[in-house]
Amino acid sequence: MSGAARLSRVVLEEDGSVTLPPLIEADRAQAVADLATANRFAPQAVKRAQNGDGPYALHLAIRDGRLLFDIRHDDDAPLAAIGLALGPFRSLMKDYQMLVDSHIMAVQEGRMERIQAIDMGRRGLHNEGAELMRERLQGKIDIDFETARRLFTLLCVLHQRVSAR
Image (cartoon, rainbow, N blue to C red; front, side, top):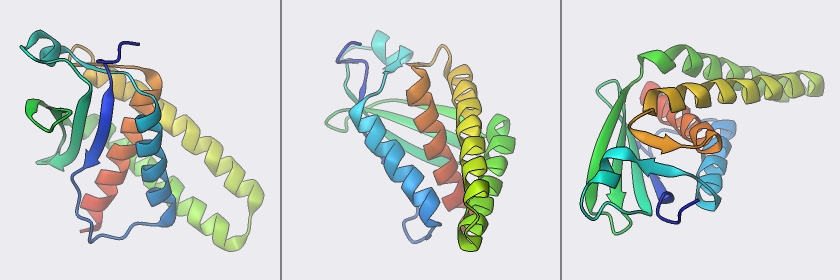
């Protein structure tokens, strides 16, 4: 993997006043930490632009029903913005919220078998979300499966914050 085709950091542009369940906050923290450790992120439009080499800083936000990838130089100088419609992700985000709610109930009830089943479902859902993320970003940003999986997690977290307002 080229040192330039990666993210140096990810910033979520979110309303910090909204408190989310600990499971969602843990997912967010883990996704950001995992992205800091390893990722593949090569914006196609930026690669063709002058001075478009990475590593990149990525600011993620949900605005006007779109997931906005605000791609910047490592020093925060703007490079490109890419928006993805949320429509194709809606059913997966809804399923993610249902699994989180089920997980919270299972923890409260102390049902370990149920928690394990829900965690397996969450892994499958994240895998499905990663495939959709890669498909939607095809030709725009080259990412590997693990990066896509983590970006899908962050999309769900951002969506929860927007929905909770």
